[in-house]
Every structure is written in C-alpha cells, then in structure tokens.
Length: 205
Image (cartoon, rainbow, N blue to C red; front, side, top):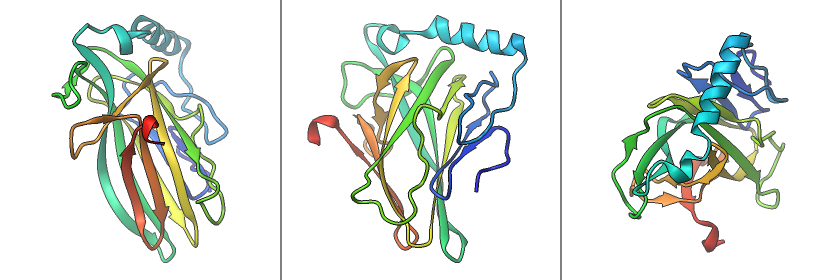
C-alpha cells in the first residue's frame, strides 16, 4: 500500500523511494505519494539552485563529467512470509570525462537527480507495480543520496530498467564493482530470487 511517510514515494509492492538527507527539502508531488510541503522561500531557493546548476552535466569542466553513483545499503531481506525488499542509494558525483574507469569525487554543488523506470511487461509477472516515471526525483547536496527501496511480494516477478538524468541531462550510472559508467541499471526481482541489479548500455540492446 502507499506509504504514509510524507517524504517518501511508494508504489504498490514493487517500489518505494524517498529523499535521504535532502537538505534543500525539495521533492516532486506525484501519484505515488505526497511530499512534505515547502515554504515559498524554500521552494524558491531550491529552484534557484537547480537553475544555477542547469547544464552542468555537460559543462562542469572539460575534464569532468557528472555521473550517478549506486550503493546497496540493505541487501535483500524478508519483511514477511511472501515479501522481500532491497534498498539502494543513488547519488551524484563527478569523474574524469576522458576515462571509462575514473576516480569518483564529490560534486561542488547541489544537483537535480531524476530516475525513470521502464517495466518489461513481457518478462514481468503477477501484479504490475506502479513504477517511477517522472516523479522520482530530488535535489541533492554533495554526498546526499536518493533512497530506492525495491519491494516484491507473492508470485511477482519484476523486470525493469532504471535510467537517470542529472540537471535535465541524460547521465551514466557507475557500477560500484568495476568503477565503469553505464547507461542504465537492470533490475530483476522475485521473492524466491531476491533483487538482482546489473548494468547495461543502450548500444548493447
């Protein structure tokens, strides 16, 4: 069921998302849940911050690019007889634009991170979850993250891809195991098999 947490986004069984440590207090209203209301001053400050950073995914410097980082903060655990969840944290960092495997460093300002999920309806089974479209986003300060709690229940099999944008520009996500950036994260979830996350590139589709 939809979460009552005013700072979280949730869909039925398949996915829950919240802004973790988002100092700017910014989030986007959606059908997946409601956001904690901002004051006019806070909303204006957040909007100004995003506008100032617009385009930085391409123009921070000639030698750096903004990328999405991922860390599993809670491996697959059972939260009921027929339900499991896995939690990952996504953040924004920068790395050498000329390298396919570079050093990850913190950014120098706040950035708008957006995650969009595409459900593979042919491979998914059971009750279809509501997924993140344009609603799963947050303005993040350096080192802050967007928390993604992936839930699956019963006989569900959820297969989807997660794509990302930073400040309105398509962004790559770094595989924490190899340090290499990729175009998307591929998720396969079931109660029996848990949640498995792998990385892929559009050219490989």
